[in-house]
Image 1 (cartoon, rainbow, N blue to C red):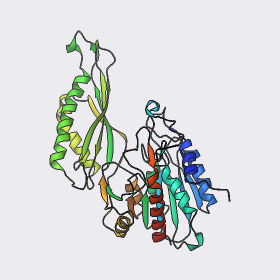
Image 2: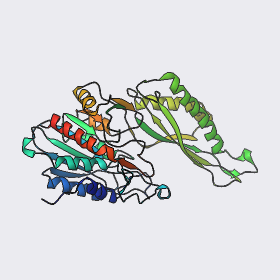
Image 3: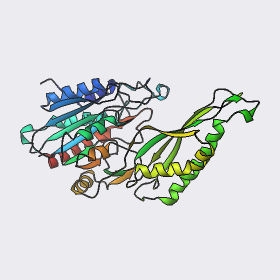
Image 4: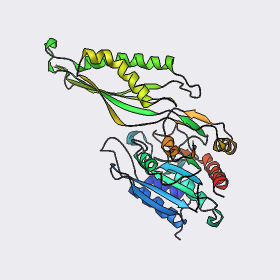
Length: 381
């Protein structure tokens, strides 16, 4: 067996391999080099490893590693990709781990390549012969964009663990509930023309202005119609994220787009939010027939809720934190489709995720390793 890296070495090797996923093709990268590195490590530890190409993706792969035999067991899951970065706002190279002020800085340290470095360290201490149920490790692709890796894995139902932990950064607080996420583009087609004769054209920006007014009313209505007190933002949300249109001050704008996202509460279907969106825009679609269209930017991610269970009770005990709800989306609803009790719980803070100078604090290291050991002891030994 090759000599395996310690935690800091493993973290540095993972961060050095850029695996950005983005809807912008200029940023988007494959993740095979990360998957192959993980495969080498876990094979050296005695895991059976398989790598699956994610269909209809740009060179993206999932990894599934299995140690032990039998039914049930524990799945430790995470994603192998990161978000893009703004180089001008980083104080160091995002792909080089810097140890400073009791923190490891680097892109993916907490969100969430660092989770695999923790798993690697804990697994080096395992007695394989003592396992009574299997331990699985899943590394997915494209969580930061389409969640294509988790969708593909859920569809194929390759394993049936008893429980699953997704190691997203939660400060090791167990998360049992989160909102869904969907994003759409509202496209307005006007009629361009010379700005000196407004009556001869139809200004798409002016129509978008009216669309925005209706969307703001819809956004405000969400707070009146729906509420879940488990969330610190208790209503569904609607965000006006990006707007593009026009090409010159002296031309009537003939085309304009508005990108929005909506985040549903557990128990709300995509159809519910889409119906409310269409209803909100109906007066304008009737007024400007054929000029306003809505298209999905990428497949939506459902909301997540794990009912009270043995895993919830155990997670609260070993983390010393009550379970909570969060406003962002994860791969949890797809992993839950395997039929297992599912929680989101991992090292680092979501406040550092997607931020310049992302870091993992040293005080998370021992806590995370101890928590993983307790999970493996409970569900595999």
